[in-house]
Image 1 (cartoon, one colour):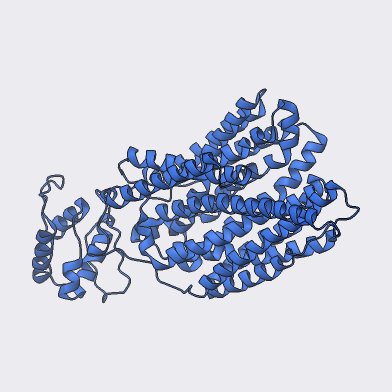
Image 2 (image 1 turned 180 degrees about the vertical axis):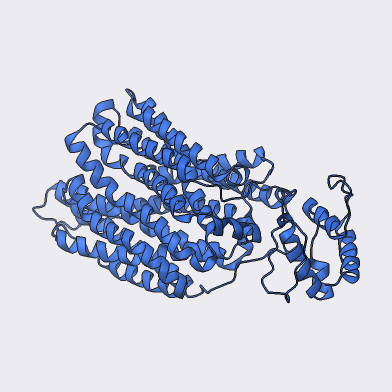
Length: 586
């Protein structure tokens, strides 16, 4: 952290801020998981097909995926309070619209408004944690965030199943309204601004490329599960998405004010953990889809019974998250990730031989053990990567991580549905050809058995994905927080008019420049480092910021109006600083 942010984080109470924001994240995540159980009742109430009802989930995912890349700009342009309260108010409005919906289009509109608010909350929470906590204490805080993220999906399907058995589907939304109001009220009371606001430019062209790219990609992958990968609609939308994202990436790399700064990938540990997160997210999302399919479609369990089977594992996983966070702060992410993936792979192997008589108890125990493995690796992997990023890149890093998780979840789900569907068809053909093995079996029994075999094959693919993640985890290592210097990273337009982000990591004597105001604190630190470095290091330093000029004038004893500043280039700065260093007592 820079000196200013260290002062902020040490002078405010972190507990109330985290409580309010985690509660908001819990509601957003809970809302995302409750609708799948309600699909049959909504189909009956609105007289719609399953494909149409699926838009309540697909539309929500699309809005989230499109909005999350833009949150990096929002987190820099607006204060923490403004952004969180606005997102919760938008979420509340969407909940009200959904609760009073009398037609499916109105309900879908409400869900998409909800998604617009919810999509901001999770990246904002991650960024606030990175701001409030130093790298060696972030694990525990990220673990608390993980508790909310995992606990909500754990109780979501079970809670929705209970409500639907006793009340109408509208009750799910009406029950969420007072909770959202409470979070908003608590936000006004307890929430403090913890981030720096930067007057960065809003790049409309990047927004267009991002919206088309991520929207098309997520839509294409979500449709691939039902239409198949050979569908013209799927191929066309995915192709449009890839081209648009290529243009989006090009735009970010040449822009002085990128919407999503892809320079974050210059940091090796962030890049590595991002790839591992793709594998982990695919494993988690796919399993959340496959096991309910097996339980309800192949075994005939109700949605409530299916939810109860998943509940213990998810609860254990949620409560282990804070513990895992503390272990991460002490031992790092490498061995937690390796142990977690080994447990996940071994327990997933227990699902590749499911039958129509596999016991409920066996499924419950294996599912719970599998969640223990996931708990050990989810937050450590994400935190290890974000810890390497300089403070300036925190908003971009959190936005990138959340965007990739959305895309990986969609890709993983579609891939596993395709594997399951294709292998089920193959097994049906094989069983029909082998009349001796299916003698006396009805068509429904053959289809059920083939479906189970298809699910087994899909779990085998999950094992393969897990092995890839495990191999990559051996390359994880502890790294210091990155520092952007000189020509390594071009200083972006969004840093102008604000104090620079250079940090002085080593103590340089006991030097203090008395009489300076706190606004110049970072400049003096940079100047101390400048005076202690070699000539080549001096030439690498950039001092091209208005705040630098003001501070330099103060150090020179210049009493003229500080707004009347002569703009000089980097070479001029270096020459002036060398002259100042030579004439001062430093």
